[in-house]
View 1 (cartoon, rainbow, N blue to C red):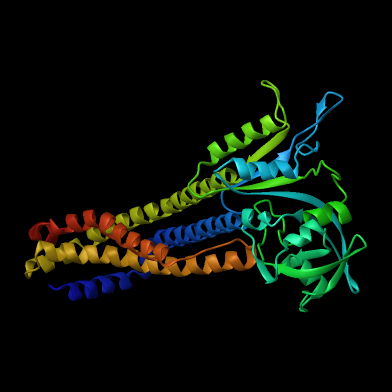
View 2 (view 1 turned 135 degrees about the vertical axis):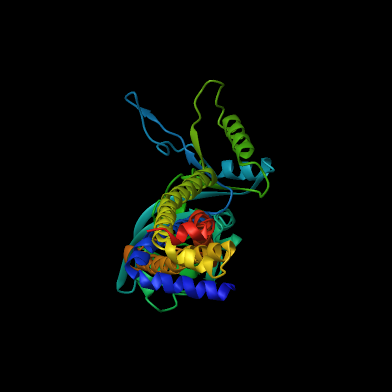
Length: 410
């Protein structure tokens, strides 16, 4: 008997018991659909985290001012002005592992353009900020050295600010008023999306740090030139932990902090935070896929049970076929094909339901999903493997029946 004849006989046997076949496939359908959906959701979350890493900038360390103590209570990080522009320049100059160190001043304010206005975040920066945060200018130009020395009234707008103030119009060359100070828009920033904390990174205005200090925010005048944060980008291939140690030692020396005294600054390694979050997301995705795989296991057991019942019900049929010349391997092939067919049909139906559920989750729940070819191929292969694994024992049992005993079976 050839394989085509075995498939035809197997399909006819499955059609005779449609309801039983459908119930048998149900476990496979649910399992495959669940596995595909969980993999799609897990991959989407992974890609979202990778986008956040790119948005923040790679190999990034954030340096914040230290805390202060009032009435015996320690305030949070940034409650003291302990960092200066000179600290940033010293870090970039004296630590070889550091590629860029970008000081920044941060504040908020109302920006007005024509009849539109918008409340947003204002950053005073140096050009190293673009390299440290992996940010590019979408249109227009970056700041010139003369803009910093002369505290020029020029700004770059984030995508959210552009849409809120100018709709579809080109903002480059337009004048906006920030805290009643007129500023010329010289460019717009590439869209970065949300940060890992859900903050809109495009809701921002960038200006030269000297402009922010002298004309808008008014912080740290004179020789102090204090800053609110320093973004530090470590060179590719360099150890983040070692760079962090060197930065701490340099700052303690510059700030004349004695041994045993607490740092007057705070270092935050965002790459480690994001890597931890990425690993947690990956583990959660694997756990969800493992839970979904239990349905596949249950479906496989269901196939074995139904095939064993089928062997018992069709014992006389097996005996008749063997009496007229069917060999043991023909019987084995027939029942094995039935089990594989059940698994594959359930697998394909599960794939269709899994894809639909992934699309529905992305559409209605707003969760990020990413569905590739690999999960689909894996699901089909796993379904076929289940059919072979759980169908082999019943098929083997049927092939070992003796014709006379099978014919006498009631």
